[in-house]
Length: 537
Image 1 (cartoon, helix red, strand yellow):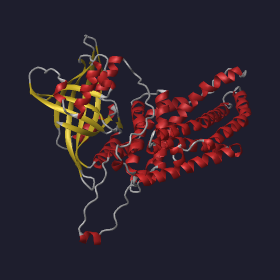
Image 2 (cartoon, helix red, strand yellow):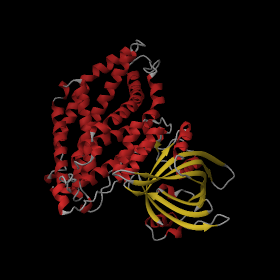
Image 3 (cartoon, one colour):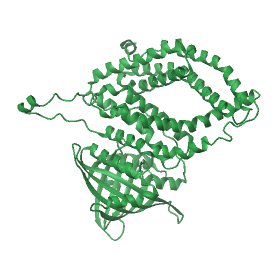
């Protein structure tokens, strides 16, 4: 059977497992023992392409399954083959998936690798499942599965390592994806669950590689649907939000699980800022998108951004500032010594990401990216006379481009205007200039493909973004020194040696403000890729 899975997977805190199980058992549950064997090449060619191939004993039956990542955080390509009952485990055979989209992807990767399949890991899970019917306008039937057990990784030797599994999966069986979203939000908030991107197969791969911290995930370019008939304002919103979540979710998943990796925190903050830009600047593309209500999404995103920033900004500033101060003859001094703030931030970074309000925003936006276009109901003549006017529809591609041109032009003019008066602005206004420039950059990166009619259009967008970089760098350094100045000024209450840094950074302020003004002035010369003139050059 071939299918496109739509599911959420949540990690369960150890102290909440009994409550989750008790809540699940309020309906009829089925208990199944799942024993699975996972296969890959020795160099993990399948894992590198997001493909999982397994044999699993489900009760008395064996099932061979291949899965692969889909086009967003909820979608998974999947094909299952029932192999019947057998006393011993059957052999794995990739040909069983031949002729399916995910099977063809599997065959292509194996052909390119040329390496044989080997068993890499196994799982032993006790699963409790229950079907839940979600009533209301977004009706749905959702299968809830509580998995408790372990992942065992080995490389053909007696030596092996284990990792516990304690997670809740919610899979849409039929109905509206928003019904799945509503149920996922309710359970995550009631039980303190957090969305996880780490599959059981990936847990085993990490065990094999003895990896504790994985590389942070960086931003990716939006992938817009092919064909103008599929691309409207809503589709643009979904593609851009999906690209933001592709950066945010893996980093948030790691931090929620306990990671304090500085780069993961940094990339999550970038993802949050990109998401805020997308939700703010693209809201007008579809007036019927309730998820773009600032009152719903802004506070949790801002709270998380600031809380995570307090941690990284302090550590980053010290790394950058100390060598410069040492060269200038400053006395040796640690501005963070004696402060409890950093330790508190390290402890709270996971709490910030696991917070119900933040998780609720993630779940809602993941569901938004997976929602199918709404079909227009056919009304009878009598209904047409009685019913109110239909809800507004998303902008067409042409109208969306015109809307985006206006937004880009507005932000561009703001950046030029701010540059001319940067030195006369107060500190808060100067900081606002940097935020606006980031919004301009992110919006340009998001929508540049929509104006790429040919290679010349693509190069015009690249030239424009290149013109922004000097101003971005200058404002970034200016902001770092402003943070450093505030940090050392705060430290003077604990140690008088901090005054040297306060004086040194204060003296540099005016010079760097002038540098920012000059760098911002260069934006006025940038070739605006969204204009017709730029596309015909």
